[in-house]
Length: 362
Image (cartoon, rainbow, N blue to C red; front, side, top):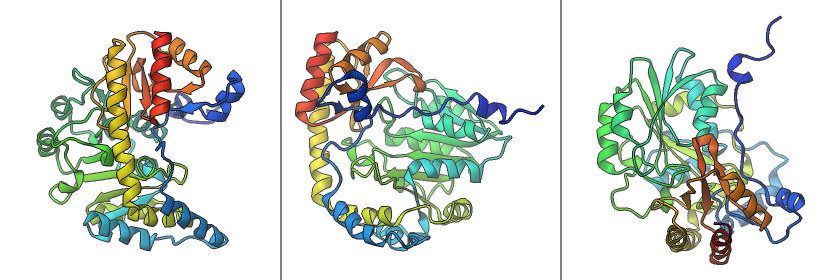
């Protein structure tokens, strides 16, 4: 008798999201729970986006614009690219799935960095695709030289997260340029810049500076983080028009809701929300890094909106102790870090509470 599902589905370990606030309150009988687990914007969504969502909600009896015409053109204007070079999806995760389905076959191999975003592996395995993981180098950093050396004739796609999730580190311009020069044009490079807007580092490479020179480069970004629209599910990719054309062949119709499209257009105009979020995050990241290092934890300098705390011991007891204090953090064993917690930068009072709890527990 045949198995109901292929082996790669039978053995697939699903992505485990951060623990919800309501579930924590029920399980631990605590109140005033704070969630520092999912890299969400603690200031909330863009007020301008909320206003647009409320207006769009009155038209949800109608199907959305299947081409996301106005959102695509507003994004293109905002980014300084052509509308034909923009592809929008239900979160950048949908674009990752589509890219695998569109550009790879069962015999192809993907190249990943070990310890990086676990959803690359989940998405690849769910499509029965093979992948190779290259170890990170010291400092929780991508080793792009080693990844270039690991390219083979079977390699069809490479995933790069910059800044990385969950380690919060990033690689610089010269590293990326050297790597792109080493990649054959028939190998798709997916550069995931989900935390692009948070980076405060002169050496950080803007992926949009490279995709015209490298026709095999796809740059992904999201509205889930700095724009505070994680619940809307909205992401986008920038690439040469030929790649976007292929993605449009394989995506489902009406993949973006009318609410997501309206929110995405409005959020780009909310410059004040973006500025306040960025400045708040930078300030709180430095606070968390300083205080957690004072507890003896080797926390790398974050280029994102969260910190990566290597506890040097299994995380489960510490994670559990924090939950009992009403603080949700994020263990990341699925990414290959069984001794680390990922901690989102919250409001200052939240971060103080986390630091005080960690001091008690450790």
